Image (cartoon, rainbow, N blue to C red; front, side):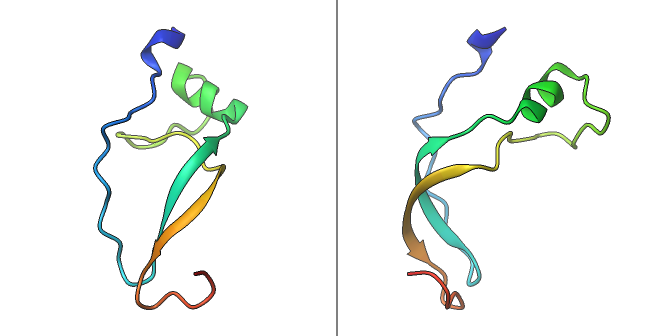
Length: 71
């Protein structure tokens, strides 16, 4: 049921670790594999809780102290 997938607008901004970046996401894609995982029909189901999606477009908001390739 598509109604159970809703954007979360109240997600707290996480603290980042030294080797992480914080990205403000403006667009996110849905891979067909994500729909199979959600329906339980994919061959290798992930451990729960599971956050679908890996593809996004956005702006780097913050970088960790050890990040050197992004600003």
